[in-house]
Length: 256
Ligand code: PGA
Image 1 (spheres, rainbow, N blue to C red):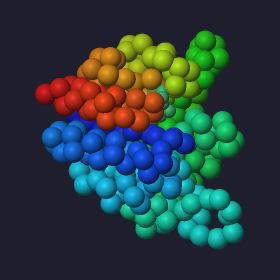
Image 2 (image 1 turned 60 degrees about the horizontal axis):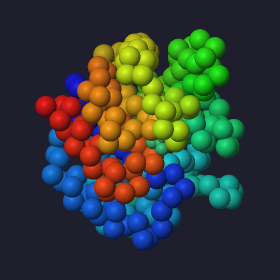
Image 3 (image 1 turned 180 degrees about the vertical axis):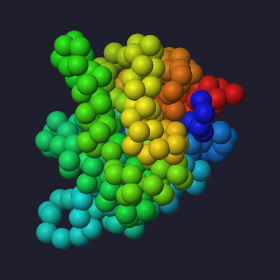
Image 4 (image 1 turned 90 degrees about the horizontal axis):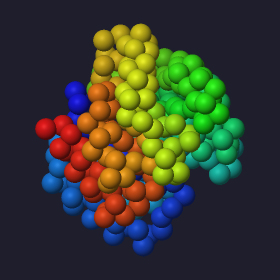
């Protein structure tokens, strides 16, 4: 892996204050793996408490609004995430694309708003099973990358400083226990890398490309050792230290 691997837990709509103990345990262990960048994106309600509870790992949001403030009931802005202690945000997760009808255009605007607020970003892309079975996976992901990544002028500083990541998450692999074939992951990551180089020039090499979709202790080593895989976005297996830490350890070994 050319970069420091990035292992991110996406807690989705899971977590109350009772889970802070898990976060503390993950954080203590993260401190023992300085070669791995570890982070958790809890629900909005826990970001502040998690920030207080941890020291070695990053804390992020799972979404943000495009505007800084205003009449948008129920929404949270990138500036608010910064204010409560987040250092990055996930945008364009397939569950937001599906549950909230988020388009590539909206996701790009969110990514640019997050960067303007000083957050790192993880932009998610990935095809559905129907699209893969129809032979369209590459075209779908290519179109998502083209339309949802921030423009090079908006992203230049963040790209250069390693604050921009892409997560390739095949929708059919999320929460299903069904993991993509390593060869397919390698091929898709290579395609995404070419697009990032075209978009951002040489600095595009600094964008980490994470794999996501049913990553767990059993498959993490093979996935993280694969060519072009710069880390993992982990849902279900990030909810306990017991499940998450072997993935962090696999990333550490993967790099050595
Ligand atoms: P999963 O979720 O690890 O539970 O499949 C990954 C994600 O949606 O980010």
